Length: 374
Image (cartoon, rainbow, N blue to C red):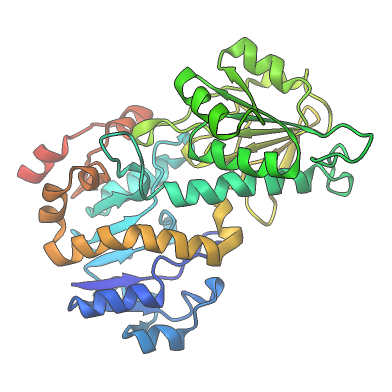
């Protein structure tokens, strides 16, 4: 199989889907890897390293034209839609359930491709192996970003998360106790902030309370509890993920902002899936924040891109085994052999094969088994 690795062109996206070591594995397995010149520079990988690993370098149009599988990090943007060939495999993050992703969804259906979304590959226990590494990164970055924007020179309250002698530490509220929330809590506790984790699962909160040895406060999620906890919070992290790539619910309503402290910060890590604050809208690393009712909103849709080398190495390591399975077996055999990978199929030759996205946009859902038969 010919595997194409284009350069990511989303605003300030510096990650790359495959490292030179990944190229070596594909080449050893008998495949050809075509990498767009300069694709790895943002993550610290030179063209020479890719060539030494056995990759061919090519302009972007040649990458798309030659490849059987396009291996990316972020969802395609409109200028890329027409580059796909009918039946081509796309292996990347897609996040099509968000309200603002209708154009992407229509574009992927019209492209008549076979598309696997990293974020919906799912084990029977509900774990998301290709989302987890970026959840770790984003959770830790959420506290770092929040701390930066709490600084007075950045428009924030002028609060140091860990406090100092004689001055109380800041309050951090994390909504969602999954992978993102747990990693955000690690950093918040490590800095010395007063850390509150809200989740709807008592079992999950018990687990978190145990692993943090009482260094966090846990609260069962209700609308009233969320409103009460954020009222005196310096930093709030939205870390909610629904299974199946579904759009996240709005857990913080606009009406709640008037009770928050001016200059406090909201970081919405769920923005790729539509965001968990009613006032959330996607931002970029260039212009990461905006203010609503005195509250700073940080809603960067590709947070891990800010630490591109770390993120690339983590993501490429996680996606490589599945990518090799697709290349070695072919798309249909790979998804037939692996139920977790089959859940990652979002589009198949013009059919939308993921129910959450169909529901979000009012489109027709076709079960994967039916799409494969057709």
